Length: 245
Image 1 (cartoon, one colour):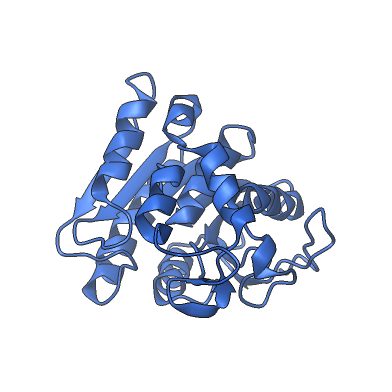
Image 2 (cartoon, rainbow, N blue to C red):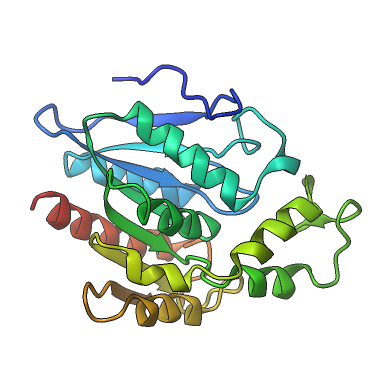
């Protein structure tokens, strides 16, 4: 099954890759990337493949302005990506939906899940928690309109992007509003987002509906190498259990 064109509120087409699951299942996992990335990442391919072996369909998306999606990268920010995700959920009507977000896509997932009951399970992979601190750590020596992000010329740093992260400041205060099963996975060798971001999210969630945090020794931010298998073998059994309930 394909879902036709998926377009956000600006009319921009959201690129996606759909991986079929078992015909008897009505659930699907939305897999989203982080900053300056897209849907064509080794870890996301591997996650889709293992989900398919378990009978679960998945859809890997590229937020507007990224990868094959329409829109300008210069207009990209968390707030716009939260809206993009809403457009994707609209296209998946009448399915049980889990969301897996990597890095900044993790923050997107939290902000969407607390306002959208269609998300029934949430996974944060090396998720950004403190957005303002993230900008200070990565871009303190960069000039908006002049420099690029993460040494990628196609990804210019904009004041619009920085302002959006500063307004959000942190998604930790929203953690206690997450009412669905929630798994956080973080590599202990993450060089981009500190492990403490995930720990802070767990603390912010409180004891009423505590999420599960799994730290993976020696695994980097992109879950490269052996980290791919370790991440997927952690996430997929959890999703199978949660979606089977």
